[in-house]
Structure formats: C-alpha cells, structure tokens
View 1 (cartoon, rainbow over the protein chains, first blue to last red):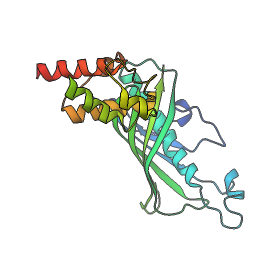
View 2 (tube, rainbow over the protein chains, first blue to last red; view 1 turned 90 degrees about the vertical axis):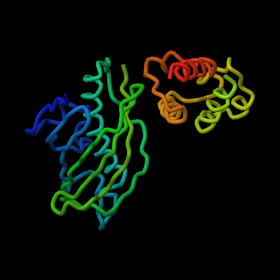
View 3 (cartoon, each protein chain N blue to C red; view 1 turned 180 degrees about the vertical axis):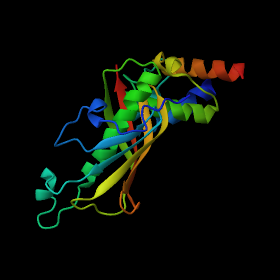
View 4 (cartoon, chains in turn brown, green; view 1 turned 135 degrees about the horizontal axis):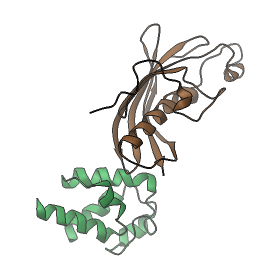
Length: 150
Length: 82
C-alpha cells in the first residue's frame, strides 16, 4: 500500500535542504514514495530575472529543471525510507529527454509533478513536469534521476 | 558462458569508458575499475541485462558483482533455473 504523507499542504523545507533564494517550491500538495505534486510562483523580484534577461525577464531553463529536481528529492527521501534504505541525502544525478515548451515570466505560477519510474541500486528515476498553473499548459518536462546516499 | 560473456560485453560497450580494455576483457576484468563503468551507470547496466536476458536481478545481487565473470555467473544461474 502506498503511504500518502498528506493531501494537505506540506512545507517543502521539511523534505528538501534548499532554502531561499534557491528554494523553488512554495508548497507540496501531495507526496508519496512514487509521486508528488507541488507548486511555485516565480516572484517578480527573483534574483535571476535581473540578468536573464535585462528588459525581458524569463525563468532560466536551469531553474525550471531545478524546480522539478527539488520535488524529485522529496520523493527520493520518501522512496528511500519506504524501501528501508538508510539515507543521508538525496542528490540530483541526471537530466534526460528535457524539453521546454513555453517561457515563464515574473509572476507565473507552476504546478510541479513527479512520477517515479523506478528505484534501483539507490537510484531513483522519475518523469517530471511543470505546468502553468493558470492555463494548465505544459511548460517543461524531463526524465530526472536522483541518487540516495547512505 | 562465452555467449553470455559477449552479450554482457556488448551491453557494457555503451557505458565502459575504457573501450580497449573492454575489447580485450575476459571474465576476470573488473567492471568499474578496469573497464571504467561509473557507479551512476551501473543501474543502466542492470536494466539492460534484465532486458537482454529477460530475467530479474535484485539490487543486492548486482551490488555483489565485481567482475565480468561474476555477472556471467549470476545470469547463467538464472537462465539455468528458468
């Protein structure tokens, strides 16, 4: 049976080590060993908008990947615990099949999703995506891997 | 044994950094140290072996594997038991 940690909002800081200004999850709405849903609003005063790009601020692709990776880490910690693995940390390991479908601008909110493919040899692989919260449009998708360190 | 060894070497071809060592490798070759397969890619090797030989190998069985010969032994034992 899959344990659903909560269907209410969870504080991401309880599950990932990143902190502002490098925490890109406002809340985690659902978290299990195999999937998660979260959301984040890119505030107009985010540090990276000043340089990316002056006069035309959009969210860097690397930050979009990081947003998905942070939720992956949360799933990784629950997955590892459920599999009975000792856990010191979950580290982001690889990005594959990444596609960006539309730009994000200051003020945009995204829904973040993670669906686990498998957990083998302490490695977690998952399909991850960002969707625009207001329109439901797919923004970015990728297959990410994380490694659980003992 | 020989057929399994060449299949395993074929799989490792995608992940081994030391191609000349892989080409010359026998059963005693160490997968990580001699052939240069990274720890991160071991999971890919595991998945490919399972698909190629149509069997499942547990994580603990793979963690104990060091050489090509170790891999061949596990695969042949499972094929024999099937």
